[in-house]
Image: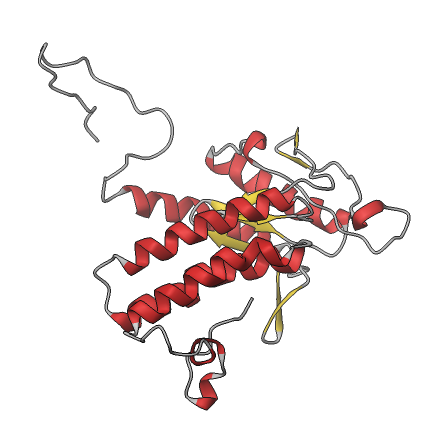
Length: 244
């Protein structure tokens, strides 16, 4: 692979060595990335499907989206086993995790621990991972994960989703694509946040109003149209959006 150079007004720059990562825009980069990340995922999976997440008749121990990985286990010992498998496979191919971009969360039913969070240190590649405490969260794929008691966090998420609805409405997507995008990418974000926190009704009132407004515009519904057509079951001929 040739060393990249650039031609600014002052002339050609010296060669810029690429010592880590992959080149953005290079057609070979995603192939190299997939080959490397597959090694890590396979190492985690072969350690044992010991995660609590059910999928049909199996259990899942790792979620993967691009370079974002989530490891799940039923005990602290098993979770460390998964982290050790990820560490050894990453060491084998020369990859390095950044603990400052990671976090761990240990949930327990033990009543001795407030908010059902037990502070346990985990490590990856012999480095400690930051531990999420009560009222703290970690943003995974722009969605906050944790015991979200902080209402301000939910307010911020609602503002982001409000903007996303506006962008979808002004996009060049077909109406059915707009509705599908809202169901697939917008609503699950808020559903997760509401299930893991202690929301107030006022926190989502702004989002619900905007959702009704956008869906009415997409479907060319008059203002006098009842919102039941948006939130009622699809089995009844309505759109079946989740109501908040």
